[in-house]
Image (cartoon, rainbow, N blue to C red):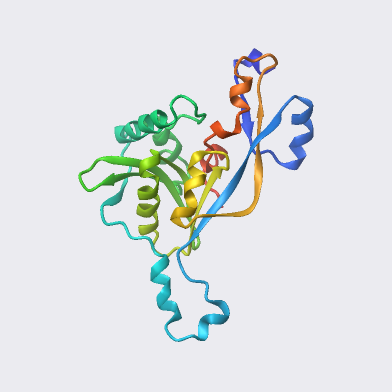
Length: 231
């Protein structure tokens, strides 16, 4: 049926109710997808009575001295530049939905609610090093999407954290098999909650089946949920 519709692959994080039909159709889990969180304030709890304990919260707040978040422009070609760098870093081995300037404009700038806002992350000289989309949910700052090269991922996360005023925590969703997740602990991000499985189905006899079922290839964020707002 997929091949008849010109579909090479169907993927997502299905609910328990969908698993039966998917399993019978030949779908299978290829990797897990988890939520990574970075605290921005100190949860002092029983330590609240210690003099000066609240001053330690400043240690958790990231500080960026050379990079900044700039609101994305319509069809911003800097996003295309970052996307090309992201592709090159994967050496033809990655799997991700296309993040182009045109797509980012449609997905975020033209969205109905406008609650997920896109940014280009730039160095002081204006060089784009990353692109992201952010949503605030109460005291949580959600990184809906983030693309950058391996060399710049830490700078991008720091720049996002430095612009998280009023938030207590930053959340990021990623496939656990991707190289990005192996670097997150260096920047204060740790896995939270029980991961969900990324489920993949390809047409019977597809030549791409082995590639799509390689869990380490997948780059998967909240962007793939295709939700205008995560609340």
